[in-house]
Amino acid sequence: MRNEYRIALAGNPNTGKSTLFNALTGLRQHTGNWAGKTVSLAQGSVSFKDKTFQLIDLPGTYSLFSNSTDEEVARNYIVFEKPDVTVVVLDATSLERNLNLALQVLEMTTNVLICINLIDVAEQQGIAINERLLTNRLGVPVIKISARNKKGFPMLLDTIDRIVSGAIECHPAQMTYPDEIEAQLKKIEPKVSEFVGNHLSSRWVALRLLDGDEALLNEINKRLVPEGG
Amino acid sequence: MDKPKIIKLVHGQKGNIIKITSLNLDGVMRRRLLDLGFVSGAMVEVVRKSPLGDPIAFRVSQTTIALRKEESSRIEGELVSNEE
Ligand SMILES: Nc1nc2c(ncn2[C@@H]2O[C@H](COP(=O)(O)OP(=O)(O)O)[C@@H](O)[C@H]2O)c(=O)[nH]1
Ligand SMILES: [Mg+2]
Picture (cartoon, rainbow over the protein chains, first blue to last red):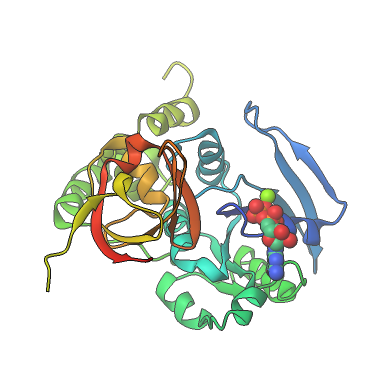
């Protein structure tokens, strides 16, 4: 059985991703280039029980529609490099804004953990967050932490451990779109599915195609179509 | 009661609170503004106007975001309150 897993950290800017990354990995980190991209991502490892988690600190973005290099790098990493778990770090004091990105990630990939950070600041502001209700609504585990105070880490690591070992199954909630869009999806999703197999979520790719996302189409051609094929 | 007054964000004055009703843009620009929180129904406060009126800083969903004239002139909303 393998015991090394890749865990990607995604989130809006300033949600404490790097603080979390540094607190967990300490000095066990380096920056690495991947897939020929000039943007380098910080990587570091953390041991938990019998496992090693390789953490990757993705660029902080408000969205993952590849309108900028940062968004493209984060998105491509999640869908094409396929980390074992994608942890979305949210700012507890600004959930409405932060959930936009979280919902996008839930459409892209299955193994997602929602990590609500800055819970100490939220408590000071009198904000109470019901993580069980959120877990039920989102279909994936929701954990509250304070990265700066190193609070909530055991629960976070244990939940990652249980996702990679299969003890927790994620069933990310999917957005339902207006009838017109759902009807189009129904038409093209089977064709997309033939093409992308289980490499990518066919619903997500179909949505992006409806959106006219040519950058994604090019990326798929580059990565999934065999040479000379 | 008066009919709600609809203005473009670019014409907002410092302190104005505007409830967004429409975005008259398409494609990547529209997508970007939606992602930044300029969605229909959102409350936006005009935080700061530079002397020439461009860019303008807005407070939306707990974050301050500066928009260029090309963007703020295409977003409309209801003037909800007029502080001062
Ligand atoms: N009070 C508090 N501050 C935090 C916490 N986590 C991060 N911060 C602070 O939030 C700011 C942004 O953190 P950073 O890790 O750079 O965010 P990133 O942009 O997501 O990588 C820094 O000033 C951190 O010290 C937390 O749990 N509580
Ligand atoms: Mg950072």
